[in-house]
Image (cartoon, rainbow, N blue to C red; front, side, top):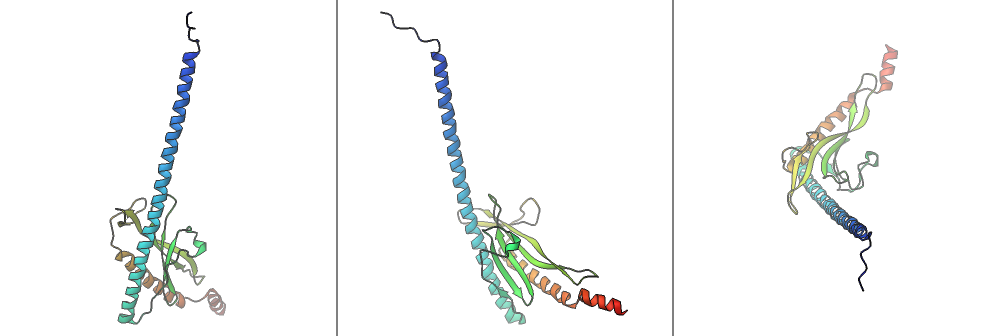
Length: 212
């Protein structure tokens, strides 16, 4: 008895089975790639939180030491707030933002650490500035100033790179640069608030004009 000859469609079935196997293998490979990418993102996010907290804690420590020196040298009282994981909600900086406030009299400067999704953490500065005109005393607005980007150079090593150049990070900077910049902005802000105190209010200007 002779064996039956192969069905004419058998080669097509074989190719179809191969196609299914290839598709499933490609899907498994994509799932593995997505899993690795997700783990990498989660690990980088964890490092970013560690780096931001470490740098901001060091800035806070340096700021308190410099405030004590300033008090001894000049009698000026700079209050350094506690490091917080939230700031002014109107700034909308994101849930992972760290925030430190430095204040002298009615002048205040903020140091922030935050990051965009999948991006590196940045430290920058902010203060409430004043715009002066001849017809209005002052208009308050929040002004931000570039600081540094935090770059991973090892498991626990962090490089601070100048973020003052739009679109890219510049040279590496020492941590003291952040503390110095915060105090420079605080001194500038104090000068601005002193100037604001000498500008007559819009009501006073109107009274002066009507009297003349």
